[in-house]
Length: 261
Ligand SMILES: Nc1ncnc2c1ncn2[C@@H]1O[C@H](COP(=O)(O)OP(=O)(O)OP(=O)(O)O)[C@@H](O)[C@H]1O
Ligand SMILES: [Mg+2]
Image 1 (cartoon, protein in one colour):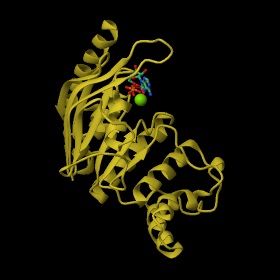
Image 2: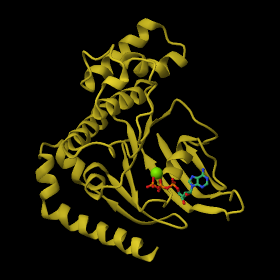
Image 3: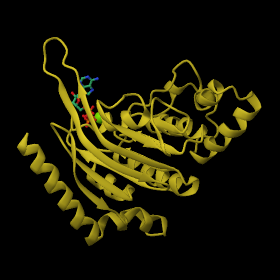
């Protein structure tokens, strides 16, 4: 899998007499097999717009998105999205939600159950297959959303603030779960968050974006997720001097942007 965002600019047309918004300006980004790229930046700097371009929900005003050598022209089964709000189908139970993409692809009930069963187990949802989704906690609903995204075996997982609504403890556990899944399944990930700590802990690369118009202003290569997967506890990784130093550096960049607005 190889993704190239090439000189992508997005200008949303103004409605009701308002001027157009330049949400992204000349974005260049690459994402290769096994990368975990995290995007961070102030609210409105164009993170979701960038994710929507990669998902194929939106076309760039200028530039192009190239996935494995071909221009992205719409959504496809090679990319799955986990939304900030779980976006599950409330009239279906847990199993039916997880199987939904496979059903659209025309797989038999038996084949669907086999694949869904694997992810139900992997995400700790065993025993809840027949529960209605409204009866689950927020963290469990988010795990159903992740399981649903994984069943279609996408090459690239696109996650827009997937953990933003969770309490601190559940959030830390979910971070570890996602890193373990990333490691075990070999997927590539594009991940958006507002939390600097989460961004540094999860990513192999961090892109910091600036608002109006949205640009990538800084990039960092990150070693921390590998340290966790090699056996260091998440808390020790996050408390290490190396982690704290880069955390303060990224916070200073983001605070400077906020003041400039
Ligand atoms: N469909 C749209 N039509 C017009 N303007 C839009 C549309 N979607 C987003 N925008 C504008 O584009 C800019 C970037 O929005 P985007 O949602 O990509 O930001 P974001 O970085 O994801 O913000 P947040 O962190 O708050 O989710 C904002 O100024 C927003 O108002
Ligand atoms: Mg957003």
